[in-house]
Length: 477
Ligand SMILES: Cc1cc2nc3c(=O)[nH]c(=O)nc-3n(C[C@H](O)[C@H](O)[C@H](O)COP(=O)(O)OP(=O)(O)OC[C@H]3O[C@@H](n4cnc5c(N)ncnc54)[C@H](O)[C@@H]3O)c2cc1C
Image 1: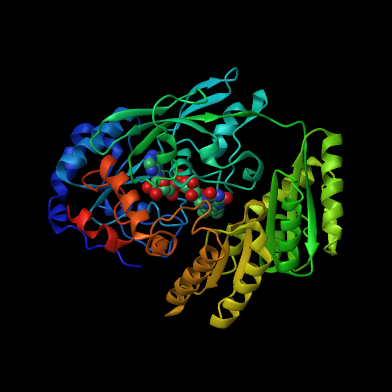
Image 2: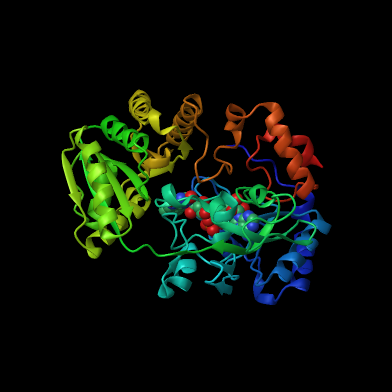
């Protein structure tokens, strides 16, 4: 993976940059000791590392604005950072950049149950948003598996999803408004607690913009009353393709469970060893959850069971208790961590039409066998959002490159069957060079012009999202 050479003039002016940042921030908000900046050298795409020039940890929108104004004046690049859990290298720094972390900005600003929203500073973690309202019977729906750690800032930048987004939609469907600080330091309000703001709908442009357009410091989020009840069911199948066909049939029947999650044998084993959830020992597992009153749950599960039986499940078990349900979800949500105990892996994120699941799962098996790297599958099957995990040995010369080539081929397959390069993890550096597979030069140019408007100096989150050749002249300034 290529990155541009660092700007030598900026590296040489490090002392000036630091003193100007220290002039606008409290002393403890600027980190420059290399031993400490190393903590920010990568995100969850750990294959790529580079320590930044400095890290700043502001506490307010005003401080963020001061940082951006300062960096803008000095021509210093800025990489916004939430919790650093991006799997696409979205928060990966360059040696000549300042990392702007919002982790200290984690307050709840306002909660309004009558109008069903919560306003938070964006450094607040996803789970802590629900944590702020659950005692009153409410929740925030998007639930990335990383929700204990990831921040709302990163969720907005990546338009994150999660297991329960099949029914409730992803971040963009639950985001009402943001406070955005532009690279110039200007602060703008976009959207708000109302359901349809007047003027251009810029919220859709900001959500999923991967730190390219501005730094989001506050967010107004839709909250929902907790459902009366929910029940997951485990279904085991003899082959990946059969489980894929079952998912396609459930969706085709017009059923809308809250979640349909898929795991293949390597993931089932790793997650079972971790969570002891009683997952069946089989080739492919579906976790399907429905919610509502007890009668509604029974009715939905009866229809789902009838469809599943057409695919001869080797196991079928409904959760019998709250405790059991928690374990079932603990296993699924720990899947990436559990796989990490077995091998190094690269987690892909592509989306395909649900009807193509059986074909794509078969092709991934064939492609993995052809290059000799194992691929484990765990993903949000209901909305076709796949996460093949390519297992490799980071210490074996050539393995990372092989892994990158296989990953690119799998993502190209997703586009070929009518899908998309990303479902929820974003493009970052990981899929940057594949954007030409998805978009024509005219499509890409339209997106670059949007960045020109928000960040004319191309200083925000450099060398991400767009292929390097397409942005070279703009980045050169
Ligand atoms: C174990 C594991 C499981 C995961 N499961 C899921 C999942 O189920 N669903 C899912 O969608 N993702 C998942 N992810 C990926 C990741 O957690 C999400 O992309 C998450 O939203 C990133 O949030 P973060 O706060 O860590 O952002 P970071 O990694 O810090 O940054 C992500 C991107 O957001 C930008 N950014 C950060 N803060 C700001 C800001 N204030 N303003 C503007 N841009 C900003 C960064 O520049 C970067 O481009 C998982 C990751 C891991 C490690």
